[in-house]
Image: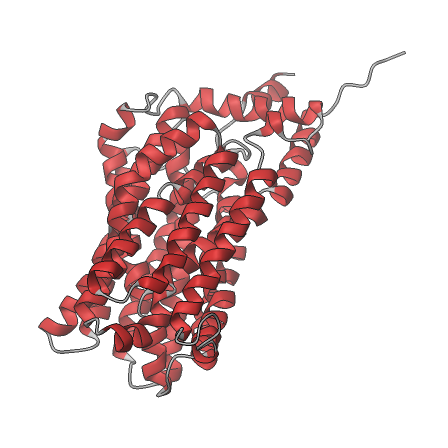
Length: 451
């Protein structure tokens, strides 16, 4: 009797499909909560400043100091994840950041506000690059941009789902937990405790890798591990191999600069979109403002669903990334130019936010095809750490520009300049041998060609 030889491509596709269903939606949920806990101060801004006396400059500094804590512990956090496994470390990150996020109820002074925001960055350090690294354990390069995009849904979903909820909680929850509790305090407490709960679930839900996934059979584990291993071997020929060598690779530093500009645009937007929409509508932050802030996020979700998939199909990830990032730069500039018209301003913000969100999975796919193994753990973390310092610069440079030029739109134009520079930097990666649009050919594909 002839033994049937399994089709490895079919087995690999089945294994990847299972991983996509089991892992990516849960990672995206974790990112929704993480992003909400770091940006929900945008919804609390008016009430927080009214109750505590925080100035605009103090608010911007406190919003951004999160990223100093994040940057300091990003690299060591990701290296620990690589050593001890994703399940325990990602769960630990969620539980600790949930506890710190809940502590925002005590932020009654400038110093406490700064301290808690800094500690929130320390607690969350390593989550985003850790999740990006984790997905390299599961998904071959040819489908990684798509999976990164699904994970990236977490950021706009935080506005689509969390925005209205945050606005609603602030407007109606005074006195919920104690007689003098304010809406902004209850919002921080509830959303922080949700993070703790999801962190506990993550401990039991996430496997460390294909070999420990109970929902894969032995054949699927072998084929998936072989495919990922073959790609890692191929990347060794042109990637930084050592965990510490990646930290001094000038091309990794270049990626940091591009990532920095992306985050300047993003957090210059994220921390101020509720108050910007509030001013456009002429009403205080609440459910209505939360719903309107969700509109650009809906367009970003549509962009994430369509554009990275299209980039994969035509094998032009860098070119598409440059185009969408340019769209983000143009959109944020137009939101200032058209500020007298609320409808057109919202349309411009849709362009800005979609460009900022969609460029990220394409950017990180380019990074992950350059770095391998231990270098990926440290290199991705370094890019995330230094790049995310743009989250400090974004809100602070926006306030600086507005006060220096005595114009509310000057901050928007300044963000557009950073995004424009980042677009040029992303385009220039091709000049430095950092553009790997063509898919990595696995050993399995080579073998099938030789038969």
